[in-house]
Length: 498
Image (cartoon, rainbow, N blue to C red; front, side, top):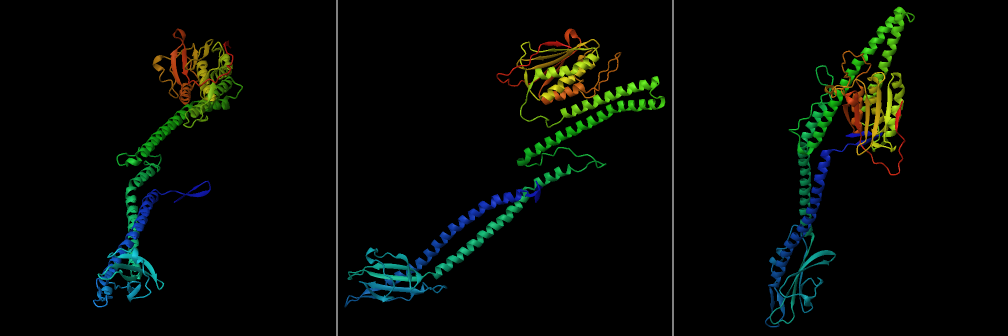
């Protein structure tokens, strides 16, 4: 199996082939080791067996040595059995001689003689030699006879073709047995590995079935967790991770569906207003009072729709699983960001007759927090927008930035506030407070939901409390402190009013 990556084919590794290789390579090495040891054992066994026959033939001749009574000459009566026991299917050549006092009594005169003085008596000694261009195995024994001062040497030599034939035959059988062993083991291991990997095949089919459309209509994906009861222990962590991924995917799809449903519901209202007032404009024109009122309503609906779309995009960015900022920790000057965002909101506050105040450390030290400045700015901007939008005419909105072990950012207003019983629900998307007797607000119910999502991205916490004297609302955001590099200078800040 091959996969294409980067314009070239890459071979996908097979787990079965890898396991088979891991098992057969050591088995092959063991077979080679057994072959080397077996060949040495076979050589020693064949040599020992043939040497025993050669020693028996030598001993049979040595036992027939005799000394003449009259002249004291050494004589030998060669027994037929001495050479009969050496006959083999290989028809090896047999050579012998009996030597005494530097001369050969009987046998082959040119058969090489060993150093008789260095040989022990009555002990058969073996050696390898070459005779007439052929390798031979020689057995020799020295005998001391009564009445003869010099020792008598008996030698029997045999060519080695028979030995070599037996060794080759045994080695051939050993090789065939090892090949059969390795080959049979490979087949058995292949089948055993296949049966052992069968649970992985079932797991693959279970995962593959979840990528197919499910349900009567053929739509959607099955995100049911994989069963753990029949999963092998070796792949259990993998299946647990897959189940976690399925759960997060199910949660993400659910969030997307809720977001789509809520967004479509919220977009329907301003679009309906636009259609209705456009119909009025076609009927009455723009010169009549009804036409001008319709234009005002259209403008207001367009503004609400624009703000809703901006908030929806901000919420989508805040909900992204992959941060839009680098993975490396970022450091933000909280004072600088807060002052810039507050300055941006001043025109909107003045248009509603609301005063914006900014309070920071008196020494003007820079407050450095961990987080992306864009996310911190969006969080504070949404808090200020909510405080200005829901405040009363002539009211005040205060932005406070404080240091310490945990940097804080507060936005406080003196508007109607939020009842304590409702403070847990205002972070829900598209949730708006029902305030009887108060004029309808143009908010979409996304401001604090965006604040909560951004705070989660920044690792911050958000708390809602009543303002001073129990009036209005105070939102406190606790941010993560960042290491303040030595020698950094803070931005000057004090207490400003606009």
